[in-house]
Image (cartoon, rainbow, N blue to C red; front, side, top):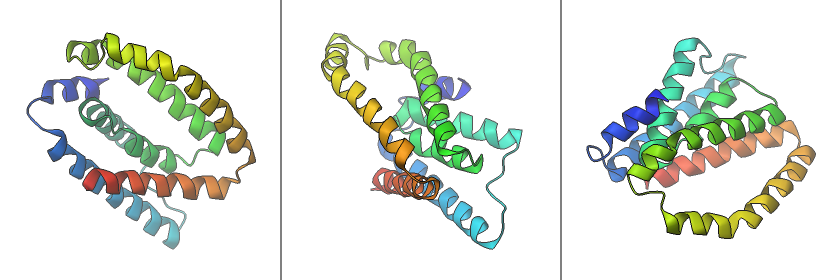
Length: 163
């Protein structure tokens, strides 16, 4: 929540064009560090409270300013080495709660309005279908493939943020 407030206050001071490459570079660096540490030993990205607080702050800032908290959360959840079901469940609850917390801020900035709410209602059936299909695919996907897929998608998102 502190990150959302910091991101809200920074709006107008830092542009998306300035923030996105920074986020992308940090995510790629953290993915590389995680990969390198996993190759040399069983160590991983730090998992202490300071790491959780830093990642939470970063996710809040990036979600408020660039709607780009996904790769940051992926790095944190990979560091926690959660099994795929817990990984997806934790991410779903995190974004559910975080996005509800963002509603007043997003509304005051004009991001949420009548038109955006109507669009959300229009795509709701596709979202529900995607959720059901996601559960089916997740249950059939081996753990190693899930982890590699999540890492690859985070890297692609980071590259997209950079360019």
